[in-house]
Amino acid sequence: LAKTTQPISMDSYEGQEVNITCSHNNIATNDYITWYQQFPSQGPRFIIQGYKTKVTNEVASLFIPADRKSSTLSLPRVSLSDTAVYYCLVGGHGGSQGNLIFGKGTKLSVKP
Amino acid sequence: KAGVTQTPRYLIKTRGQQVTLSCSPISGHRSVSWYQQTPGQGLQFLFEYFSETQRNKGNFPGRFSGRQFSNSRSEMNVSTLELGDSALYLCASSSPTETGEQYFGPGTRLTVT
Image (tube, rainbow over all chains, first blue to last red):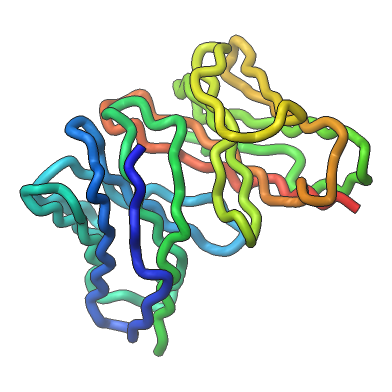
């Protein structure tokens, strides 16, 4: 499973767009890129997943360049409730994602 | 649709004892994974079960074991508890779709004294 590197922490203000970039230089051809969000003392929550180009859902967008060696999670107009740890994961070979390898994640702090 | 449920939510044990944690996946999910989360090591994968068979295993000692039943419910057991086993134990079930995203339960907070 490919190793990922992402910033340890980020600060933002309410209403701003937040972009968190993750590096995964050794991503394999059939690896997917998945992002999870975790609040203190809760289990991680799936945010978005993509393979290439851009994916958008009701909460976030995921940008993946052609070489797939990095990806960027974009959170539009964050609020205080978006303060959490965000994990970037690579792997899964499509349907098989039972053995997720979590890195340290990015601790996002949203201020009023 | 009900989410992943874990019991008990909180547990206090003493060193040397054993503990069994339970997880009920989302209906229709056949894959169940277990993770340990500590402040120092973060989220670490323990093992994954699919159709009652262990499909993947993380780098944990043999004191950590698990099983899955025919209804996909899963249990994990930790024997001869150590202080370092104090952690949040999370269970997740995987969606039977191509993306296979995982849905996590609220966790069991285990404290070993």
